[in-house]
Image (cartoon, rainbow, N blue to C red; front, side, top):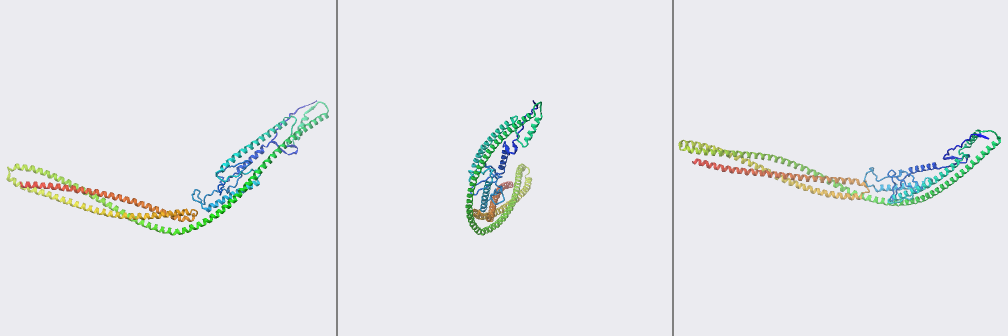
Length: 591
């Protein structure tokens, strides 16, 4: 009877990728790591290999990757990068990015040829890639030639490619799940057997033998033959080895079947990819032939256009040579007109100075008239005071006469003597007053005559100013006529400039000089028009000032007339009062 310790079977973790013992080769249990590596590789290629090929019109255009990036994926299709150095963004031959100038025809032809060359290079790169690359995918299907349907077709391709890729991914995921479940079931069956332990690494048998030795040594024998024990151990070991070999054979058969299926699937995928690539290569060859044909047609058209442009250039140069003397004549005419305008400006300045001097003289005369008016008012006040004094004296004389009449009866002799002396004195006094009044009247008459003389002089000056104003109006009319002629000439020049601009769009370099000259003429015409406006405004200001001066003169004339009327009224009153006084004095003398 054998007694000893029983060792429980150790359940070890099986790695995902194992090496089969006995040097029979490497088999794969799961392909997760390999699939992850393939996915990472495909993502890397899709990230680094992006391009956009845009064919618009007959010339075509390779869009800039920095401006817009989009990946176009189809079934088993991957788009690889064409060098972005070939993508060109050219609009005109000037360095300003915000310019609005129209490029020359030769420059556009060069751009057209460059775009065609870039498209040919891209197609050659795609063709070379399709010939050399077998595991990277195929190019997308034929792109449309029009821009309208281009983006719609791209969206359709994306949607169809995404659906196809999702379907393929689902199939692959289902296969992987089925294989993983199958492998897990087999491994669990192998591991759940207590006495059937399979070694999967090189050197596992040696470990297993050491474990068996330890297990045998752990037993204690109480009796029996050693030969029976040895036979039993040997049979047990042989049985275990046979079971392990059978399990290993089964496992190898399963792995070989898996590898066969995977290899067949790979072969089918490779064949499909090769067919797709061959179809793409044939399509690209056809497109290349079409592009070559278009290039030939474009080169023929370009040669014809160059010839026509050369002939047009010769004609335009001839026209420019004919227009240069006309431009020189017009420049001389403009110089003469500028000189005449300067002369007219000098005359206007002189006339403005004369008008200012006249204004100053008029202001001085107004001041003198005001002084004369104030003096007349003072004289009137003096006359009024004198008349009041005379009236008072008359009243006093009446009172005195009444007193004298009372005293006549008493003292006739004395009164006669006194009255005679008194009358003489009063007569002398009245005569003095009358002489003073006559002198004052003479002074007022002299002042009135002076004011009339000054008024006549002012009227003469006003007539002179009016004559000068008429002369200025005549000169302004002449200037207007000249300006109208200049405007007509400028209009004709503008029309000619427009014709030249329409004819010489494609030859900017030769037209710049003429355009500058025409712009100078336009600026001169505009300056002349502005000067004309200024002259018109100055004329209007002068007319307004003359009107104001005439109004002031009319007001002053009215004032002088009123003063003369007042003086005449005063003289009439003075005459009446003097007549009355003389009559009273005569009556008193008679009495």
